[in-house]
Amino acid sequence: MTAPAAATPVLEAQDLAKRFPVAGGIGGRGRVVHALNGVSLSVAAGETLAVVGESGCGKSTLANCLTGLMAPSAGSLLLQGEDAALMLRREPMRFRRRVQIVFQDPYASLNPRRTIGDTVGDALRIHGLAARRERRGRVGQLLAEVGLAEEHLDRYPHELSGGQRQRVAIARALAVEPVVVVCDEPVSALDVSIQAQVINLLRDIQRRRGVAYLFISHNLALVRHIARRIAVMYLGEVVEIGTAEALGRRMLHPYSRALFAAAPAIGRPSHDPPHLDPGRPPPLSGDVPSPIDPPPGCRFHTRCPHARPRCSAEAPALRLVDDRLVRCHFAEEIAGHG
Amino acid sequence: MMGLLVFWRRFRRNRAAVAGLAVLLLVVAAAIIGPVLHPIDPFDMIGRPTQLPSARFLLGTDVSGRDILAGLLHGARVSLVVGIVASLVATAFGLLVGAVAGYYGGAVDNVLMRCTDFFLTIPSFVLAIVIVAIFQPSIVTVTSAIAAVSWPSVARLVRGEFIAQRDRDYVRACRALGMKDREIILRQILPNALPPVIVVSSLMVATAILTESGLSFLGLSDPDVISWGYQIGVGRTVLRVAWWMSAIPGITILVTVLAINLVGEGLNDALNPRLQQR
Image (cartoon, rainbow over all chains, first blue to last red; front, side):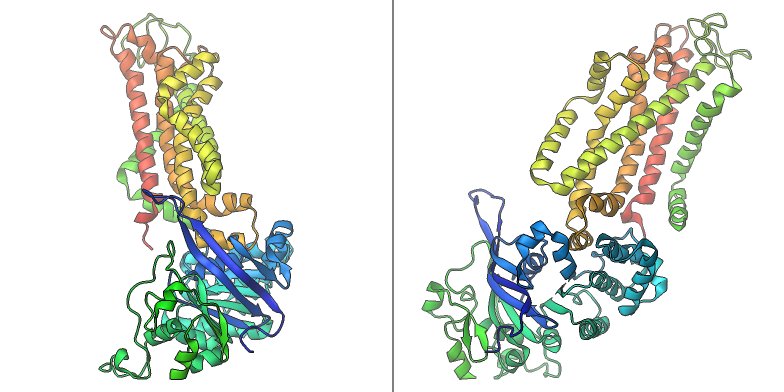
C-alpha cells in the first residue's frame, strides 16, 4: 500500500471538517456551508503533497485549517505527532515556527507600507531568531536564498515584480525554518514564464532544506511535475489520493478523470475536440453544486457520467483500489474499462 | 523623504488646496506672533466703545471699548488650539474604538458600535452644550465636549478600514507567523488605514472651530479667554448700528474654516489611493 505516507508524517489531518454557519436570508436560518468534510491526509518530511480541485472545493479552507488560521469544526490535526489544537493554545509560537504559508496573490500578501527588509525581518524578530544588529544581514541571506539581491532590502512591494514579490513571500515563510510550508496556489497569479522559475526555486529549497510542501493548485499538469503524491478534492472531500506516478498513469475517480480531461494538452489538434478523443473522458458540464446543501449520497453524482441510483443514496467511502485510495462505488469497473 | 516629496507633488496639483494652505498658514502665523506684534490685552477697555476702524484701532472697538484686532489675534490662538486639540483627541479615541471593533468583530464590535451609534444619534451641538453646561465652562471642558461629540465618525471610518484590511493576505501572513494582535493592529493595519482618517480629522478641525464659536456665542465658553464666537456674541446686540463688530470675527471664522476644508480636500486628493498612478 503506497497511498498513505510511509514515513512519520510531519503534518497529518484526520477527518478534518469545517462548517460555516450562513447568515440566514428569508427562511434560510440555521443553514451551514460544509466547506470541508472528513478530510484525511498527511505530509511526510521533505515530500510534496499536492491538493488539486476546482475553485470552491475547499482547498483554501484546508490551507487555513492546516496553518492554524482557522480552527476546524471537527477532526484533528497532528504536527509531528502532537495535537496541533492543543499546541496552538498552549505554545502557539512552537506551531507557528514549524508551519508556514505562502499565499496565491503576491500583491496582497505583502504589506504595501513596509519594506521587504521589514516584512522578512518581522518573522525573525517575532521568533527571536536574530538580534537586532544581525537581523539585516540575516534577511539579506534569506533574500539571496530566494534569488533576490541585497538592494531589495529597502524596497517597497510596489517596486517589485510579481515574481519578485512571491520570492519575498517565500523568504518570509522560510525565515522561521519551518518543517512544512502550505503553498496556496503559489504560482497561479504569476505569468507563465515566471511560474517555472518560482516552481524551480521551491524545489531547490526543498532539496536544500528538506522542507515539506502541501501544494494547493488547480493545475494538474503543474502538480504532476512537482508532487510526490496527489490528492484530488471535490466539494470538501478527498475523492482520490495516491502517488503522482499512479495517478499519472491513470485516474480512477470519474471526477479526477474529468479534471484531467479538462486540462488543455499541448499538441492536440484543435479540430479534434476532447470529447471525440477516445482515450479521454468527456469534460464536465455544469457547475460545482453549492456546499450549503451538498447532494446526498456521492457528492459528485449530479455531474458524474457513471452515476447510478446507488450513487444518490449511499455515500461512498475512501477505499483502496489498486494503488490508490478512491471515493467511488464503481472504481473497479472504471479501472476495468481502462 | 521620497514619500513626502511625492505627497507634496500630488497635493500641489490641487490649486485651491494650496491657496487654502496659504490662508491657513497666515492664520497660524497670526495666532503665534500676532499678540506679540500687537501687544494689547483683548479685555482692556482702552478706547471709546463702538468705534469704526481707524488708524488707532485698525478694526475698531467693541461695545466695551476693547480692541477688536487684539481680540481677533488672541481668539485665533483659542480657536486653533481648541480645534486642533479636540480633533486630535477625537481622532485618537476614534482610532482606538474603531480599530478594536473592526479587527475583532463579533460581540466586541457590536457593543462598541452600539455605543458609537448612541453618540451619533444625538445632535452633536446639543450634546456639546449639555456636556459644557454640566461641567463648568472652561477651555478644557469645551475642548473635551467637542472631542466627545466628534469621535464617533472617526470610529466608524476606522472600523470600516479595519474590516477591509483584517482578512487581507498580508495580515493573515502575520498571523501565521504568530504576530500579536496589538502589533498587527498598530504596525501592520494602522498605517494602511490612516490616509482617509487624516483627511477626516483635518476636516474635523474646521467643525471643531465652528462648534467652539457656537458655544462661546451662547456664552458657554471659558469666560477668561476671548474667542471669535464670543466676539460675535458681544457684537450681536448692536448688529444694526455696528454690523462690522460681528462681521469681522464672522468672516475670520468663515475664511479659516474654508481654508481648512480646502486643505482637507487636497489631502484627500493626495492620499486617496484611487487617484494614485500605479
